Image 1 (cartoon, rainbow, N blue to C red):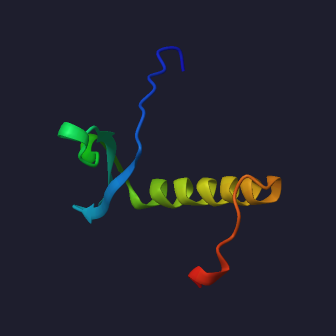
Image 2 (spheres, rainbow, N blue to C red; image 1 turned 30 degrees about the vertical axis):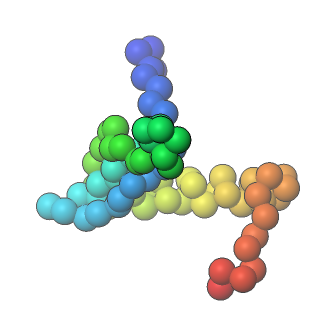
Amino acid sequence: MENKKEIFADGIGQIHFVGGMVRFDYVTLQPGKDGDAPTAEGNVRIVMPPQGFLGAFNSMQQLIDKLLEAGVLQKNEAAK
């Protein structure tokens, strides 16, 4: 990955399935006017086939498990 590009996002605004592809709309928080709450503004979309989505999900689940094990995250038992 010689020409690696880094993209920052505060989160995912929406995930949807259209035309046989999974689409992630990433957002960044933009400051509100005169002290208003920040607003989420779309900045990039990632589109991948369902198999790519499944692979990404599995990778994220493995990372979540490692972060739980390291104590960086805590399980929310009430969310069940």
